[in-house]
Image (cartoon, rainbow, N blue to C red; front, side):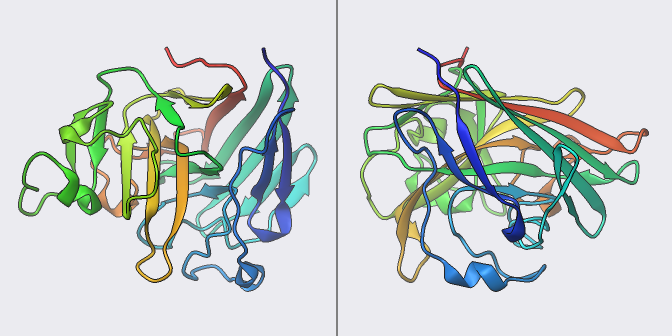
Length: 272
């Protein structure tokens, strides 16, 4: 069964998606963060949940990028934000079986960036993420103590195969256990199963590196007053921090001055 998805967006506060609702449930997790109302570009990230547009980086500087702390405006059919070195336009529309978001990032040719649809989902501890078996997955230093091998000295990341890179099972979210890990998987599709409900993400971006990032925080982050937050994040790029990106690890504005991509969300499973 497929149904549309209703989306609510807070343009005044970073263009954040505050609701992603099907007929049966709300998919987005949210938390009370009143300080979010008064942030400025360059501030430390304030996690209010929902779906954030993280660009031109996720980790690093500026924290979670340069779009979440800026007001967005409505220009025709698009939501638009102007960053320091780019302009991002996003057009969202409902479809018969979900929703589609089309993006255009304008900037100087050669401008490199990472983008993520930083979607924090309201999931039970029985939920699972389905990505093609064998997809290469990068793990980052916060996972070091959870692997079946020692972390290589000086390594920025290590790689293994989905669903258990380096022995760390990532396809199951599970109950709180005090851990928090992020991973970037070399895939363009992911389907989340939670009971009988399904939410599928698919990313298309010709000529750009596409990934699915996961954030599995089971009460391990932040150090003070940790909480549970579980994210599935379609991404352009293969690292969280743009400063760590190698030659093929970041998206790039082509000679036309515009990078374009499409995110499709559906309420059926399209994981193959």
